[in-house]
Amino acid sequence: MLTHISIRNFTVVRELDVDFGAGMTVITGETGAGKSIMLDALGLCLGDRADPKAIRPGCERAEIVAGFDVSGVPPAQAWLRERDLLSGGDECLLRRVITAEGRNRAYINGSPATGQDCAALGAMLIDIHSQHAHQSLLRKAVQRELLDACADHLPLARAVEQTASDWLRTRRELDLLSGARDEQTARAQLLAYQVEELDKLKLSPGELAALELEQTLLGNAEEILQAAHAASELCDTHESGTRRALKLLSGDLHAAPAAAAARELLDSAAIQLREALGEIQHYIDSVEIDAPRLEEVRQRLEAIYDLARKHRVRPGELAELHRHLHDELQALAGGGQRLEQLQQALDELSEQYARAAARLGKQRRRAADSLVQQVAGVLDSLAMGQCQFQIALHARQSGDPHPQGSEEVEFLISTNPGAPPQPLGRIASGGELSRISLAIQVVTASTAAVPSMVFDEVDVGVGGAVAEVVGRLLRDLAARSQVLCVTHLPQVAAQGHQHLQVSKSSGKTSVQTSLRRLEKEDKVQEVARMLGGVKITEQTLAHAREMLETQATAD
Image (cartoon, rainbow, N blue to C red; front, side, top):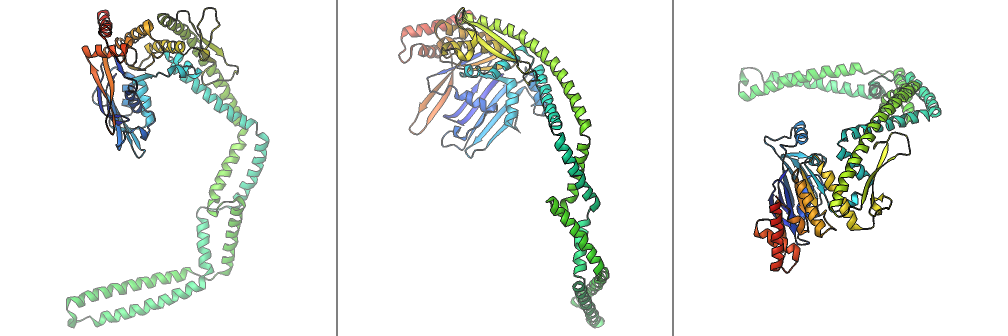
């Protein structure tokens, strides 16, 4: 579960540290006080996209740290262990840093992580239901995901998706090969001619560089030999002079250290000149004036250059081109065999998909019946017993494997007796849609495996006795999972095990949002404020106190 969150320099929050406990924690405050800021910060730790504009004005960076107790979450522990991110204890820290320059970094237990990693881990730790969930709930994809999550058959759904993807990929390759036989035949003929040309050229590794060097030597042989002979004569002359200088400095007369050093240098120079003279002679011996060989080299290079120009590649790329064309020709030569292999693979994938999709459809129908009954019970408690909630599973028109299975999932509702069920998006009343969305969220959340759930003003559009029911539903849910609820309803706030109040203060140059834990009489004052608005009377206080005492008695 979520144990604490630390926020620094995020939007209007300068510094905020909050500890959370088990049960139901309610977060309240005046409109515009920033009740959802903490949840926005938590979202960043869970991989949401970062915006440098969210940094508090005048600050260089924002930092958020969220701590979770993973002792009761084996999937999260396994995920961390696989990546060598499991700390010594049961705590897991998710940290996000955003800089004014636009850089942002994420960390898991102190190690750098990607936003995708944080999102993958966060999905195992906490589930956030926003006040706009009823909008996303209108999408069929979201409805299907909710049903699959409730049915706990996500591994089977993923297997169906993978099999369908493999089938589609195989089908595309088969269609490409089958529909391009004429083009392939023409291509094979062209490739055969090109490969034959390159085979005849027989360009060996390193041959091009060797030929170009040989052409340079043969083409400039006279100049090379002339310069080499002149260099040889100079070396011979200087060696003789060095030897004479060495002889002049020899003998007892030249016993000074400087003379000894000079002799040593002269001797070394003479040796090096002799060695250089030998290398020059070896160089002279390797160079010859051979006009026929020069012409032969030129013709060979011209053939290489002509073929490179023909294929529009550099001469040095001919060998790689040769291999590529040869491999493509071989692949086309085996095209018929490949077609048979692809067709066989396609048939096998179709059978695998049919079996897996049939199992998935059966489980979806069973899960749909259960979900409909549970949602109907919650709707009845929300004074919407006249509503008829249904989940339709429509067979797809195409018989081809589909990544999401053989049926489309659609949530239907009838808000009046006798009226035909319609898609959720066609419901006119926003209040009805909000309550229906809340019912579905509460039911699906109760089947979720995550240890913590956040409800961000999901009770919008309800009030009175229904609001009290909403509070009880969330409190009942908190018996199984940690629940954090941002609310504007006193009936919901009175149900919380812990109560956090958000407030905003304004200075001359800045705005600051703060948060404090309410106890006893402070709770009464806050619930009274939510009941009575600006003017709080003794009657309002008595009502608030009664609501809190009633809840305490119920426990």
